[in-house]
Image (cartoon, rainbow, N blue to C red; front, side, top):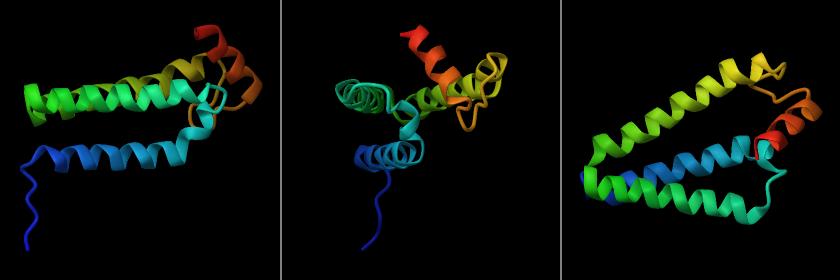
Length: 104
C-alpha cells in the first residue's frame, strides 16, 4: 500500500494536525476567549483552507497559511515586545491580558 499525497484530504489532514499541535502548545494564551469564539476560529480557518485548496490549489492554500505565519511572527517578534510583553511567554500576564482586551 502506498501513500497518495496528491489528494486534498492529505493537505487538509496535515493542516488539521498542525492546528491541533498549535492549539495544544499555545492554546493557553487564548484561555480568556469564550469557547464559541475559539471553535468558530477553527471552523472558519478550516473552511477557508479547504476552499482555497479546492479553488486555488495547494500553492494558494499553503501560501495563505504561510502569510498568516509571517503575520504571527511579526506580532510575536515585534508588536508584543514594543508593548513590553514577551512574545514567547506572554509575560507579564496582566499586561498581556490588558493589551488583548483593548484589541477586541
